[in-house]
Image (cartoon, rainbow, N blue to C red; front, side):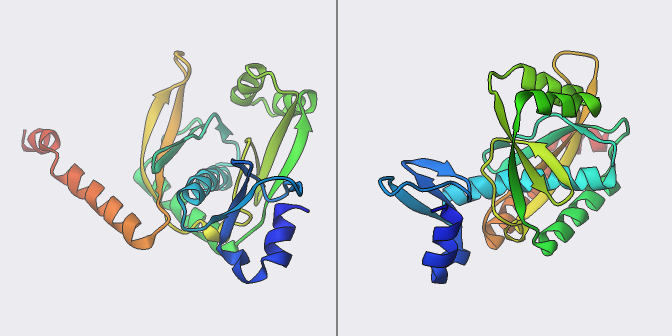
Length: 231
């Protein structure tokens, strides 16, 4: 039986409180087939493991929104660090505050759509060919520097992205995020600059509000910025 079947049809009353599961201590995807001899444990929505998964999915929500706004955008990586995440992307344009607001508004709409996130497997050659045809240098570089023969692609609404997962089953659970700032970063010690957008996901409304509010107050009270403004 898959974890999704167990959660949806056996643990019916508590299904909506699960984000994923652990099998033998490892976090698995919804379609993972659970062996009868395996040690199985649900990941509840208010747990730290759930927050890690939802933060990861929120990062992909960001990339999906960027692709909607800039349909020729090309993506590098989007890791999570603590409560934060960021995504590096190439759109051959400058990002400003209005763009950041527009991207966040699209993310909110995608959450409201509550679409299902699908995983598919693809072999190394087909994946490389796909990104060669798209002229996606960044993903080609990532694939060539791994030894895997089979990769996972996740579909988030209209956008497929290379990722090992796991993710939430649907976007409706990704409510508690905020985009924080944007910057330019150098790609791989070259002269090529990428845009980077930073976000935060905390799986609790009040904790997210406090976190963002404290961050804003910290920036407002930054004496170096105050000094520059006075000069």
